[in-house]
Amino acid sequence: MIPVYIVSVLVLLMLTGLPVAFSLAALGTGLIVLKGLPLALIPTNLFGSLNDFVLLAVPLFLLMSNILLRGGVGRDLFRAVQSWVGHWPGGIGVSALLSCGIFSAISGSSVTTAATVGTVAVPEMTSRGYKPSFTLGLLAAGGTLGILIPPSIPLIVYGVIAEESIGKLFLAGVGPGILLITVFAIYTILVSAFGSQAEASPKSSWSERMAATLRAFPTILLAVVMLGGIYAGAFTPTEASAIGATMALLITVVQRSLSWQDFLHAVKDSVKTTSVIFLIVVGAKIFGKAITLYQLPAQIAQVFETHVPSQLGFIIIVSLILLFIGLFLESMSMLLIMVPVLLPTVLGLGLDPIWFGVYFVLLIEIALITPPVGLNLFVIQAIAGTPLSTVVKGVLPFVLMMLGVAVLLALFPQIALWLPGKL
Image (spheres, rainbow, N blue to C red):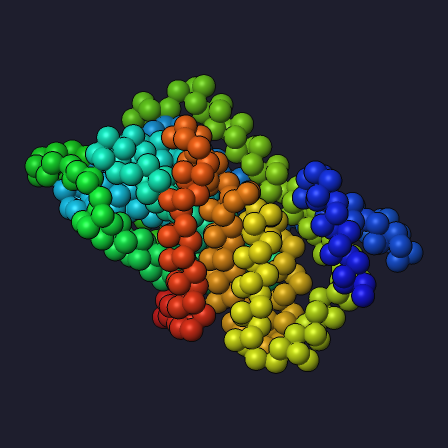
């Protein structure tokens, strides 16, 4: 019954409006006190939770993506892709998706991806006759690629918790990320061809394509340098984040698209987001230490091994749990609360922890576009200035497609594991 009491108290704390980080820390502290253990465990745990070289990548990736956002890189990227595919049926929507995919390979942040591309794509798609609900749903869903396509901040945090290779996790995210882009693009083309009066953009001349591509080339080069360096073993993900932030600053300064005020806003936004993430990390670490002392993960693992001995049964139950709690918790909280609890069972059932990390992140992506706390919904709503119901209506088909990709990933783990196994 102890696990039930712990979960009930945690839910009650969050229902009071107490932030997730403080709910986790308060409950963890209370459990340690009830256990009769010294409170000195807490400051020791606080230091240990953040004293990790890999976690330095989080603020640096956030700074890089915010610099690119403030520097208008999304506009250049979208125009370049549009010049090549904008004349296709549904070409503007496909341009938005491909731009999200490319920017995701730089930023590692879903919200930043949605904001960067959405700022440019929403007015363009609306002016071309795309339905508002479809447009907003497409961009909200396209933004979720930011936490799956590497570099991904949630995959970095998962790697720290699970003590798995960040490089392998990044590689494992490539296949599912490309699959999602492909499924979304096919749907976009079909909707535009058969169910929409949207206009394609005029076909660009070769000179226009070259000019637009040249303008966006530094951003594409940034992605190639970071990811190529990681996969080639030239530098670690943390070093890649530092190189990326420096290159982003140089690109936007040379192109004169980043003012001093923009840079200060980028730093401020990065500090805010980093503080929130690290507070949740600290709270989750305290809570994780407490539930370990109460042997909660071991008890849950024993329950699964006794009543759900099959891998498929475990995957189905975990998927349902994550989809449910994703309605109320944002992605980072889900990651930090659930992974320490589920990981012993994952290893006990013989599931690949690299595959599980990607599958887990795919499921928490869905939380980013499901009400009432789907952050991407609110970002796109703010950009478009429309009712939230319009965004929710448009995103529902994409939620179903993401669930379909999750099923494929569960049935065919090699979608994620093939690339890490080759390199």
